[in-house]
Length: 640
Ligand code: MSP
Image (cartoon, rainbow, N blue to C red; front, side, top):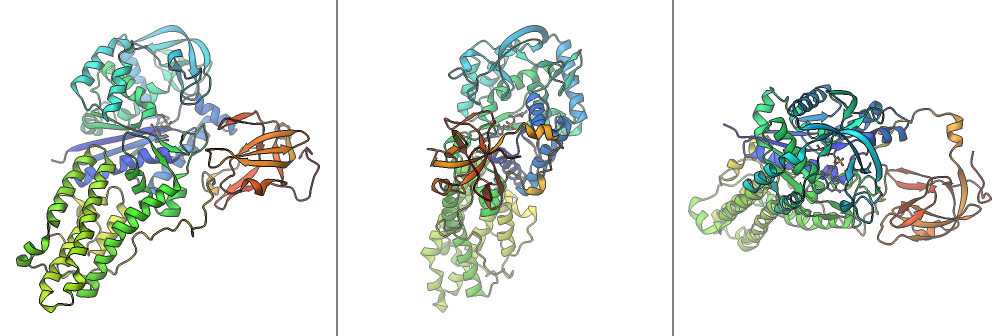
């Protein structure tokens, strides 16, 4: 019987478009699901969007849309992106789905009836970015550690979930199940939190403040949302409480999240499950953060990388490979185009690509592109431990992939690739080919190399499914999933003698960053077609925006911020404006230019520099294009 395997990603907030961070977690879930499918497990993979809360209402308002219109659009962008990244989730849940909302109400009622939800007045420091209250102790310099903004004081009567009642139970559970939260550093972090008394969790908002949530079944004046709503998606998506999927998959649930939401998943969620009488999940797998330009990437800082851009420039499989290989699961990692190119050139073009083209070309040159028959008698003498190396690699790979240590799993495969390349050098088929008496040796060597390629194609399949199929087809197979089953990889006789091979191709051409046209860093977040015209406004609405012509007096790069330029502009007075245009402009190109500035925009700090206004620009595939005037105009002249 196939073992069930259930993996989930966080459901992403729809107040921002999908970015690299979301893509990483969802690709990781896809990789681990594919790995389990290779091991003949019966898999289920869930992702989705988190659509309630005042953060969403505010984002919708900013775009002059209703929350419903807004969540439909952004959730659609996530749903459209996943297949483009070769992500094959089984289901996409939305917290606005009526079936999900019904499950939330049922579970809330159950916990309320059990006496674990109570009503009380609360005053606290609330971060709207995180949608949660902070204690003084958690703030850094009086600000939210994630958003670097001061929290607001909020006082209201609300419903609270009695988490404190389950604190000792959770500590015991974690101690009894050492890999409940992994890697270990995050388990320790949760245990450290639990050393302090656990505060009860506020789970409601009055409808007078916000309506965009799920009704509390026991009080019509309140909605619940954020964690009590969002976390329950993991069971509602399976048809809790009676669904077949729920019965099969919930007992083996594994979540993947980044460290930002460790506390809700490591503390609130198991306690909610316990209070609702639902068994807890099996593992919480926590990864680190991708940093861009050394700063954490998030929607509020605004330095997000559009994943589609990188995959379009360098290829989807290379992009997936980089993400899985460069981040040690659990630790932070830096994302840069240079690091991506380096990885592609070293691991993909050099090691894997060269091996593939060398082996296929030799099979064509010496055997007319037909798989030769290995000779069992010379096999022993010509094997040189290759089969054994493949076994070692498969074992190390399987152990690491099952534990979410993708970087280690891939390193094991690359160790085998190194052995394969050495095998070519040591056996020197080009020398054997010159000696008629060594024909059997040559046949066996080329057979072994083709077999090694088959095994490599299987091992890279979860991370680079397209490349795996390409290699498989070159070896005369059809490319169906069965080919990649782990038990097939452990048999050293998969390639069939007599089968015709396809001609060699460059799997991953080398990239020369010097010759390559520099890619504009800042691009349209979504294809133009996906950006709908905003809802109609009146001339009075438009008149609120003070647009002015300004002349750039001086410009300089903002230290440690790849995309930002600090400009001094003259618009009747001198102003400092920070603009994210460094990917397309050098500071000296801007001096003397007349630009258009939103002069009455609320000032904002970008990388420590206060920007008083915003420059208008259009961003498309070609990069950023600053809007300018047709003829010279007196600085400060308003636009209308
Ligand atoms: N809606 C909540 C989650 C509810 S789950 C029941 C939420 N949404 S989010 O849109 O902010 O997504 C957070 C998750 O996105 C992280 O936990 C991680 O999976 C992914 N990432 C966002 N930024 C990231 C990085 N910079 N690096 C890696 N992953 C990150 O929190």
